[in-house]
Image: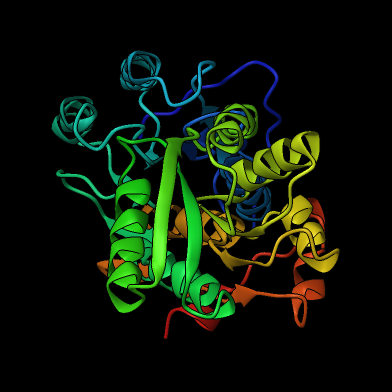
Length: 318
């Protein structure tokens, strides 16, 4: 096991690796896509909690430019030089990052993959079913619309598998509700300001929009800002379950959001990394279930991420 120190990262000795000297503390490199999406902030918080609880050193690699292929590629090269004991990874592009991930494989650095599938060798995959999540989101919205009306679609990062799979779920729901008409669509890049601008343009182009089908909560918040600026109202439905969006559900500004629990995924993905280092068994895949968060049940999701506790592995994996 090759280990290294990083300035500014404290050393925490853990019961999870009892008997190891502080200098032998295992290192986990965690790759997320950006600093702009609160869902990835929740993932990093979860990873840090598991690191603290188990005594593993967590090092975060995050592109300064959101979802930037060149930056994530350079970060993989940096990790190859540092040689962490294991990597927890999601690709900014499931096509562009195949080569860099192969370098990690060739260097025999084990990888826990999360949220975005791609070719390569991985000790396990942790995520949720984005096709089903997209389908449930669209179906819930269309039912609330009475099966008819004009909608706009705000999608995320086009190269992201999460986005493509959610759109597949939308397509499935559209087939079941022929009375729903898509009058416009735009790319919001999973970012609030980008979605705000995209929605503002759609509002200028279309006089009658009954609802917005949005691929994540950050973009839904941008949609709300554009609606407020234009003095327009409509149903808004999204995905994630971040606290600001859940609060908006409680206030009636967002109809509902389908949970994509990146905090829980972060807990389980980092626990999986620790288990691999300890030689404990792992399933090939861990799929985290989702719920539709509505005005009837939203309060359970209002707990700030920093105050949440990670689930125990044995309570989720049976």
